[in-house]
Image (cartoon, rainbow, N blue to C red):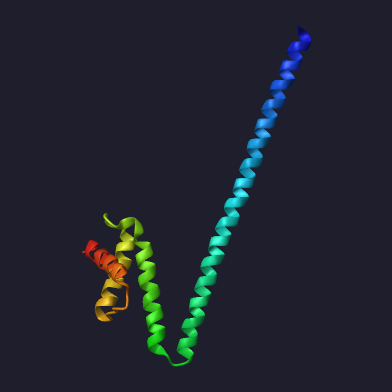
Amino acid sequence: MKAKLIILVVAVVAGLTGFWYGSYRTYVLAEKQHAWLSQWEFHDRAKTRAGLDLRLLSNLDAGKLSEARDMVEGQMSEALSQHLCPWDTEPPYSPDIRLIRDIREYRSLHPWTNDPPERAERIQNAFKLVN
């Protein structure tokens, strides 16, 4: 009877130790994967930004101010449109309202009409939300 009890205790301890070790390893691997994905996402955004900056500077150096301005305006519209995704129906937070108002004021002084219709409509709706 005593031997059976010892075997049972050893089996339970071994099972719990294996479960703990497996859970810990899974956690460590998940953390490594999350860190790698975050780093890859940051790297991808930085690469895209560097390419856009290179084209912008090349246009400026070549004296193509209108092309450079179009690139920057397009980037601003695209960034604002992506930023507005969660706030299609409800008003954004205070710092976001300030940014949208600043962009609205800039666009009222410097109109830009090269946005695709769906993006232009989305931006106009955002401008209406912050009134």
